[in-house]
Length: 240
Image (cartoon, rainbow, N blue to C red; front, side, top):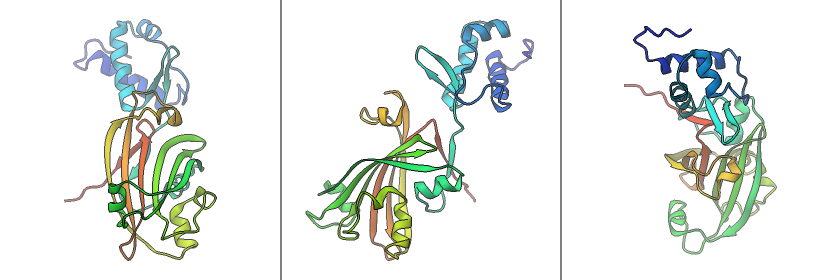
């Protein structure tokens, strides 16, 4: 119940009530919540106050809007610890989810200079360029653009790349993976990616660039991933 005499702003109280309803599954995942008009009548407040509460929940990822249809309960964001080096496939299976991929592009190319430099390639050395949609339980989570030196794995083909590249390298090629360097930034989704990720053209995304190395220090992969910001978040433990 709202306490209109409380020092806590009304919109924050409404936000907490809606959160509780979501956590208690009164509103199920991908189900619509009552309209602003219905909630304003229910709480006895203005639609503007209700809208302020809903906006906060949308921005935090608990709700999402579909233009012309309403506001819905979002899937909980997957947490990715910033420790340990795992592939997307390994990570999803560890969470009890079924990973899958859809390959949009697989070809040999001479990479741009910055990619070649990161992979320590000589001029005109080729890479396999792979573009994949990465799904969890058949829902798109990310789009990956991967560059793999052809000289390291000349027999690589589209079929072999369908699963985990890391598992393939360790089990098939008997190589030990050492470490990776990763950087992240926030961005607005690129025009070509929004339809693959099934998000709006102005939706926020997480851009992650990772260079992975074998145990002898040779870089074997550079991947640029675009993650849906409404379904993924990264966490880290920081110790003094």
